[in-house]
Length: 176
Image (tube, rainbow, N blue to C red; front, side, top):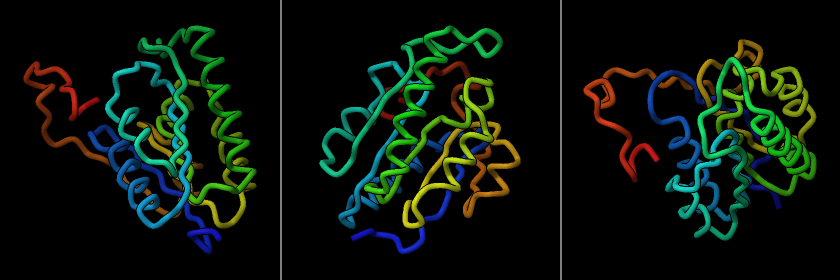
């Protein structure tokens, strides 16, 4: 039995920290209520993100990681970046169409769209064709207007202050 009668679409965007973290919080909440979650990460092939081992501890969460362990060149993405994003998108399409998950998180898909690696039109089509009970979260900076307009929840993370501005690099357990 589905956890949600009507699944909503969430967009977590903006320059501030917390987009993936918010998606992880909702993942934990859905799993805690006995729901099934698919957490698909785009452009995050680095193996040291803390969520990788954390999500592995949740039996009701299917975690799919795509991307290389390098930053993507926005102006000239590597062909592997493109094929990895497509691989993740195809997996996400299958998961969405099956309707066997209560929540599907498409982490950093908005960045892949912003970089021109994936299409917002194709993403919107997938959202519109999913089973009605499936809740979906999309994360990433620079969300396109058509996704913002379609979403039920839109949260913009605004950076007020961040240690990075003082030259402090990302910390294990906080930024990754």
